[in-house]
Length: 42
Image 1 (tube, rainbow, N blue to C red):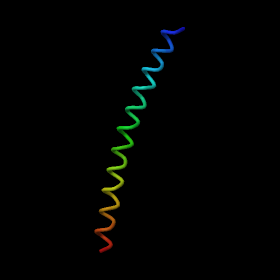
Image 2: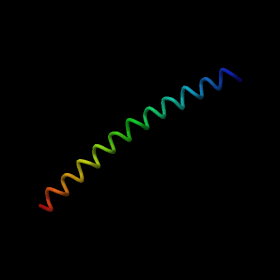
Image 3: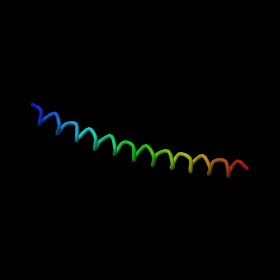
């Protein structure tokens, strides 16, 4: 039904936002890791 679809879309929306947040966190941590590695190699 229409209502079920709307509910599902809202769930998907929430999950996508969460995914985006996690991707950004991952990116920051990864960059931090690379920076540490470069410092050690110097």
